[in-house]
Amino acid sequence: MSRTSVAAIVFAAFTTLSTAQTFQPEIPRIWDEKELERFEVPLAQRDRSPRYMTPEEYYKLKVRPIYRTYPVYATGREPAGYIESLKQKEPEIIFDASKLKTKEDWIQAGKLVFESEPLLFPPPANGVFFPTPLPPSKEGILPEFIPGNRYIIRKKGVLEVGINSCAGCHTRVMPDGSYLQGAQGVVDFPNSAEDLRRAAEMKPETLQRRQNSQWILYGAPWIESKEQFQAAVTRDAIVRRLAAERSGVIARQGTSATHPPHIPSLIGIQDRKYLDSTGLVRHRSIGDLARYAVTNQGLDTLAHYGDFQPSTEETPFSSEKGTRYSDEQLYALGLYLYSLKPPPNPNPVDDRARRGQRIFQQQGCATCHTPPLYTNNKLTPALGFRVPEDLRQTDDILNISVGTDPTLALKTRRGTGFYKVPSLRGVWFRNAFGHGGWVDTLEEWFDAARLKEGFVPKGIRGVTGPVRGHEFGLKLSPADREALIAFLRTL
Image 1 (cartoon, rainbow, N blue to C red):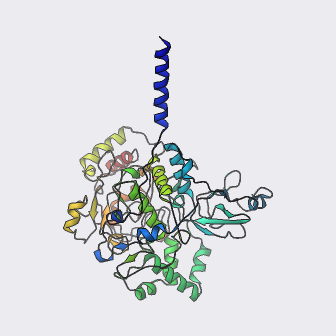
Image 2: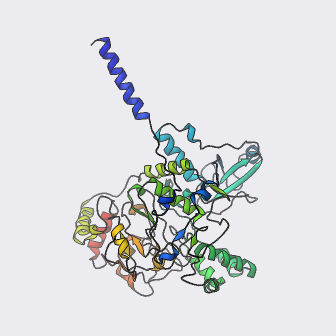
Image 3: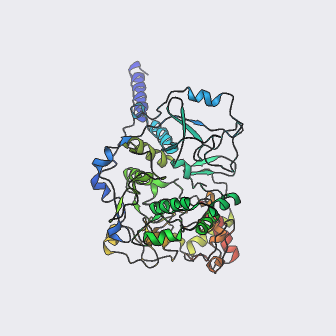
């Protein structure tokens, strides 16, 4: 082979490698006026669909830097001089788009955004903001995705902690103790008897603050007046809600304190056409995912729902006052979420699972939960909702209702009148089934007993049934039901 031929081969290989490493990010203008008109499905009551701040107002907000954070240790486990050493550190900004060259660089930068804590508080004296039953690492470090478990330095000598990161709701503790980012998280831990006692004995001024904050987070005056809403927020009601809090479920802003939705898994989100249990956001591009992140970091509490604005100030679900993510940060976040993969599935595809797959097909499950995504990516109307004709022409809508509780879809600020058909991918590492997380296991979901009055789901305190709707599979024999569940756990 001639030197010329060898040189040509080397040059071609070098060119191929260089091309593979070149990445040209296509960063959309996130808060774009035309896109804002189309990225959400209208609410069930059209005239109450949210109106957000204008692009001009949005882009006047200051971009929020993402700073390096540091571990919080369990009480008594800190290395000697740890706090003092932190106070000597200079603030360090760790997201810099100008330094990102490859796609992997952007993905890892998106992970920083996912883990960042945008709402800041001074730390309590013992360094623990939210108590957690999860054990510290062998080094004594508290689980970093639990709110308040990372120190942030924005000013030399001042330590702060934060809450409200994406990771706080979307990190799951796996059976082997590892953390799975993007999965359905834990968030709420069972409240102790002491927690319930304090709630029962809260002072009148504390109760009034709670009533006001609940109205900001969940109020919808076209459903219920402020007076009616706040009158129902009694000490006894608060105690009942605290007692009923469960893993995998959270009453996020715009939903309902009494009918909270389950936390979705974000793994595989790039293949979902609608976001939120109620299909509120049309997911057509990475730009829509970014807009969804913007609204969920507090812009929805500042929005106008007709003549109603929940708050004129930032709330506990907002970001630091007067700040926003940059378009580059949001783009990186989207790339990171799109990159997430499920963990290895330990459930075998054996004879029982293959039998369950045949039952899945025979029962018509694939009509809604269509392989390979195990969702048809459509919306199904909530019980009692009449679908507007214009939406039939613009959205993917089934003509049947599965009859589950309609509260989230019809009586909240995220209520579109629909529920999205969820994917069954990854049900083996999820819990809290049904859009309200009413049962904790697949066995309970396919148990006809859940339709009965007084049904008490296992592992969930203070919650009783019935859990109506989605009656598919409830008439199977015990053996067929076990086979179906075995198949679902292989997905």
